[in-house]
Every structure is written in C-alpha cells, then in structure tokens.
Image (cartoon, rainbow, N blue to C red):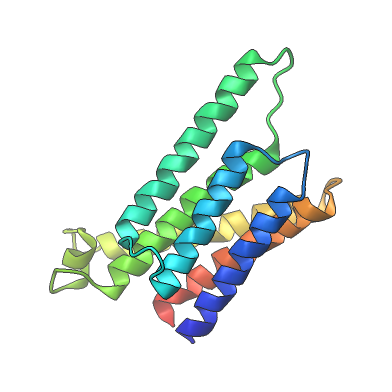
Length: 179
C-alpha cells in the first residue's frame, strides 16, 4: 500500500506543479517554489532522489511557507488595495500541512529512539497522540477548505486542478502512517 501512496503523492505533486505553472493569475515565484519543493519532497521521500531527512524536508517546507507569507504581506503593503488571494493563502497553509504530515510519518516510522515518543522527540506520554490528532485535523480542514474553494466561486481549471491535486496529496499522506 505504501508504494501506491507514494506514487499518488508524486503524481499529485507533479499535477499541482503543472496547474500552478499553467495559471497566470496565481502563478508567482513563491507558489512555483513551494510546489517545486513539495514535488521534490514527495519524490525524495518515495525514491530517495535527494536523500534529505524527513525532518529537513519539514523545516524546508515550513520555512518556505513563512517566506511566501512574508512575500505576500510585503506585496500587500506595496499595493494600493489590500487583497488577500485565498488560493495563495491556502497554498501556504498546504505547505505547513504537508510539513506536519512529513514530520508525523517520520515520527511514526521511527528514528534513533526506542519508543514512539522518543523517536518523535516527544517526551510526554500523550504527545504523539496529540500530534497525530493535530496533523489529521489540519489535513482534514485543508481538504475541506480546498473543496469549498472548488465548489464555491469562479475558479479556473488550473486553480481547481491545483486545489484537487493538493487535496489528493494531503489525503494520501494522511494514510501513510497507517499503511
């Protein structure tokens, strides 16, 4: 089941990249960069292409989300009319959700420690349970928000494709720790 989930995640990340590149309205350096990083993370975690540790991918994705949010805030400050594009915001939140999911998969798969909590670096007995709940709820909320954006509003085909691809990737990653 795990190889199939990896394949789904890689295809979804590649599809998301195509949708971001194909949409002039929402295409930006931060959106393209984030999507490339997500695709690279999915490929690396599945195939070991780059060989980075999951924790490093978590930090890279979360860091890029912060950079993208800062760039969006800077652009808003320079614009005459403040407008927050929900798709860009959801893309940044998607980076954070994927980062959390990678960290969760890594923690559940094991590491240097002997117990699940020690492997995750979570010393409280219930910390892992809380971490699983937070990441699962965040993933579910992301997919729900993406579904609302697809169903409500005037979204172009590439925007709908991006939202659906990211949702499929999020759902596949949610199954990884249990597969």
